Image (cartoon, rainbow, N blue to C red; front, side, top):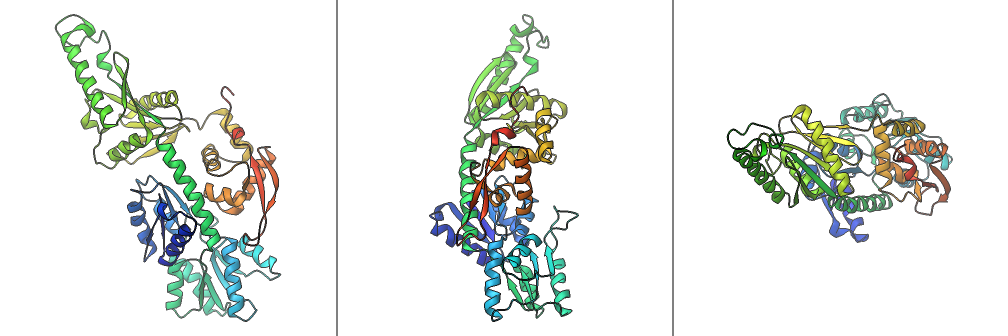
Length: 450
């Protein structure tokens, strides 16, 4: 399921496009009055959606700051196609001549390209959503409104053009002539289809194997803490401890709808699916108990959770997680991509990586000018698109970066021999033709033993 979050008009248009594309049964919308409501709406939709699609970058950024969201978060970028449509409307409004404008959100390079295509001098007053010095920071609404007001009141521009509904409302209230850029149907159509693909992949991912490894060190033969009876594991008390431990793990397996196996006298493993286990981890972190809550398990049991594409892979990651947990006593979850999450009721969730010092990964990352974590994100993004024929715009959407950055990344991939240019594609509704590349995803992943 896909959840669409945005202003009422943008959300309504997205739902209409979804219906046209046969996706109506897979898309649900929530409209906000003010952008600050985006977080609460995202939390509401997260219960039923695998993907949350925001109609702008600002609500997406706000939702990203929320803790506990499990859905994949995406936003529909304001593209050159949206800008072209706005310029056509402005030409009609001003009888064939474009007015002097201020503009926010859309990148300066995209604006310049559109104006050059039309044989016009690009506008001077353009404000990006993020400062160059801090690309993770989103400018506050008041700053964006102030930018437009200053230029309009100075007489430098005739119209203030904005992609943000709240900015548009505030400027109108101040008596400023404004024009709001909204998404074209083509842009929304592409975003919805990509979100649908991501949602289907997420559903598939939840059926991947997971392993919960449980150790009871006190059950080791020769422990000697059992008191009377025969020595070690044969004592009556030792057998009682073993029965209590096995009953607790059996209860855990039942609650996770998994299969219990005994690896040795003190080690048990529960095989289940990823969706069920991730749900139990989420309940633990939210303080809502669940089968992995330490209070449900004997105090001397140690637990580690592993996810993987195969059962042996999940089991191996569970062993790594168990080792991590021995350091601080919290539950750890190890994933196939090398990420490890510390899940605790009492402390904020923390994610780190086991492989970020892996030499082959570092070599590939250096060749591309990326960090190891960014390389992992890139390989994940490429699995969401058709890597045999992908454009920079499609990569930007899947990777969550600007088109300009995606083009630079494509150039780096070409230099490394990982991407091959196939040609150009385009049509009457697609704006300028775009270069299509084939990317060898396998070369981004270090070979075993390298």
